[in-house]
Length: 212
Image 1 (cartoon, rainbow, N blue to C red):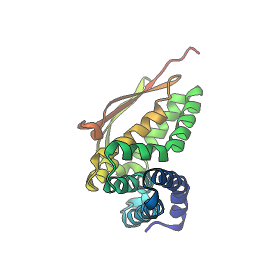
Image 2: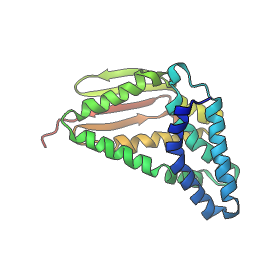
Image 3: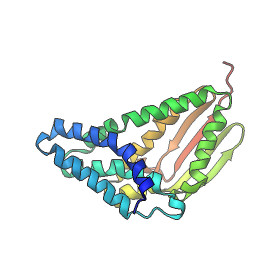
């Protein structure tokens, strides 16, 4: 079961997501919009309340991201929507969060220590409490760049277990909305992802020597 504090965090995300999901349903299936929105909310909390959050609740944030999208995608696919249209609906749901992430990383990139800030943010995710969400290997970590590989990913495994492995690609795309804005002191390079038929997720944050 999620805690009261965790439920408050869930509602921060779900308030906006429900609004956009309801809006999509009102456009596409108006007679069922309210029913499907309630079903989306109920399914999300069912998944969150039965998920194993792991030591120190290390999977909570990842499951919050996963289930807030996956529950909506499942309902739309069950309703007969194709992959592309269901993904587009989710893209609308998370547009504001993606925009915020882009603004934050763009601001960090303007700072002289922008590369180190981005590197630390990634390290905190990969090696902190959330480390139980993936198996990683750091291939490079120096003044030139930070490269890592993920060989096991909670996002992909969860989507696959629910029968929709293709949905994991939307979470991979989140990285582009955040790190894709980097250009002044850092740059994001992606070689492969498990969700897109790679054997590993292989990412690099390059340190950029800026003369600006």
